Length: 228
Ligand SMILES: Nc1ccn([C@@H]2O[C@H](COP(=O)(O)OP(=O)(O)OP(=O)(O)O)[C@@H](O)[C@H]2O)c(=O)n1
Ligand SMILES: C[C@](O)(CO)[C@H](O)COP(=O)(O)O
Image 1 (cartoon, helix red, strand yellow):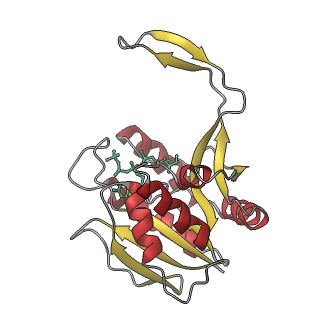
Image 2 (image 1 turned 60 degrees about the vertical axis):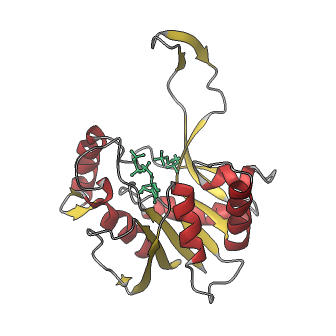
């Protein structure tokens, strides 16, 4: 059994504008609709919990999608808080060993083959698994004047994507431990790594983009329009 947790309570500061980016349209649908639809269209995913900002006026009020339950909950100040809130809002019927897939509402271009690969890897690896992309560019470290200070070695460096997949009991333990330590994790794997575990890296599609700035939206629009 797998459930999806979707952090969707962000305000989109880097994107700007009045409407939080997860509700902006691309290829005729809000980004969140693409992201949530991709997850719930997958036969192995049984439902989703979506973490929303307080009094979110844009949330369409979905209670089901593709015939599967959608539960909305109140998110938190940071992404990690929203993920923990969504985890805590899961139905009690979802077993402790259920696989949870955490996916950003801001990543609309998620494909079924990537979900397949992630579920397989997270099922095979007790430490969980994440979609990720190997770094293929030369990496530079900047100084205070935005001049090159150094070139960083890129061997064995990957960019973390989402979904990230972990057992319910492990993810809860990891997120609670990070919060108790006052560590603000930027993805779920970081919390699991803090426990001394080593989640698997699964090479995912480079076009599983997170929409962060307006330029990202233009690219995602192109990608999604080609799908439909
Ligand atoms: N307190 C927060 C912050 C972010 N998110 C969600 O986490 C995902 C990735 O976060 P990010 O791209 O940083 O979104 P924002 O926080 O909205 O963007 P910004 O940092 O530019 O404000 C998004 O789906 C966002 O809605 C969330 O659920 N709760
Ligand atoms: C979870 C994530 O998408 C993995 O790359 C990323 O850490 C989210 O970062 P953000 O700053 O919250 O968008």
